[in-house]
Amino acid sequence: TERDLIGRLANVRDTVTERQGRAQLYDQHGSLQEVPVRIKPGETEIPARTEVVLLSDDRERGVYYVLADPLGDGEPERQHAESKGTAG
View 1 (cartoon, rainbow, N blue to C red):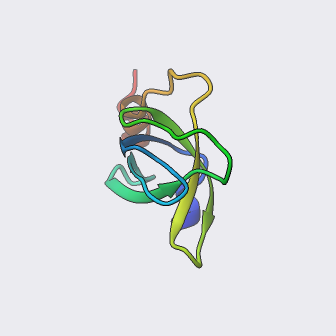
View 2: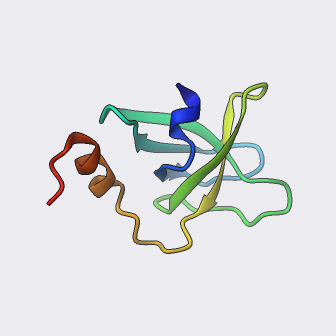
């Protein structure tokens, strides 16, 4: 479900603003998903190719709110390998 994506790391495809943005991430089954993402009002825009964390979803608007990964080393590919049981 959509809630299963909250807390996961994603890669921003194009700049994330209050009105637009998309990010890609692997779901719990290892399938690549592309989802609409936004920042909260007043937050700084997030440039493409930035790692973000999906914080919450807005079901009415059909978007996820994101924040740039504060550690910047989340490696979504590693998360993908872990979800497949192939991380080493």
